[in-house]
Image (cartoon, helix red, strand yellow):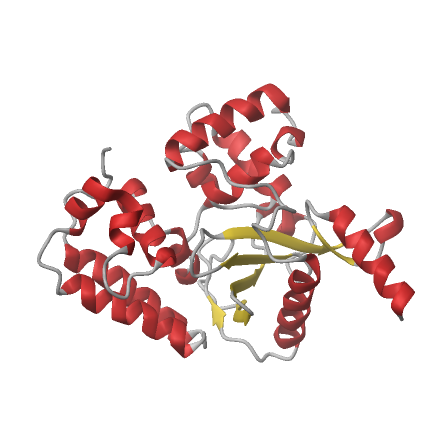
Length: 290
């Protein structure tokens, strides 16, 4: 296993965790979540053995065995050491560039990376892996079933873990929960009640215009923003398409986009992309019980 950050020391990793904690605090996230990252940073900074050595010998499980370093933080450290990046931190900084991320996949060039991002509304390798396994990736123009399987296999090697489970198997929040968080975000954004970040993409003046919400529902943690994709800007949907990132304390991050459907039986409704059938069932059930 070759680390992208083998030269980093424990202090470097602790600094990343502290930076994320500071951003979460500034963005009004749950204080318990903020403190979890700060406690883990303190443990890592005081650890005598190299975190890289611990990771190389025992992987995520060995990191997870450190005091105060739970599964989600261990997964974050694993991402840093494998790729040299931490997508969650880049997102909260407003520095995320999904097309560049997808170009790291062998055989995916600039144009295909843009199509993947614009058509699937995903911006991490983990979210793309889910799309590869639930059938959405093969529907991207220029891919098809065979190429989707090849990309899925490549992602499995890159992520060095079992393939992600498709939606509907308990790996994601239920549709009513996603729609509820979407509603909270849009309501608070419209009222000007959310902190804002300054995304680097499509923001030449560097203005802080993008509202961000950190929310919790049960054991699910959410980070929510309006879509800042080229397609959203092109179609004037930057105040409609909402991207929800979610994870539990014991699992990797997932991602879905909620939009206002423009046609068909769901026309005018808020719909979770890739889970339209579940949305239709949800709305029909709500109509029956109303």
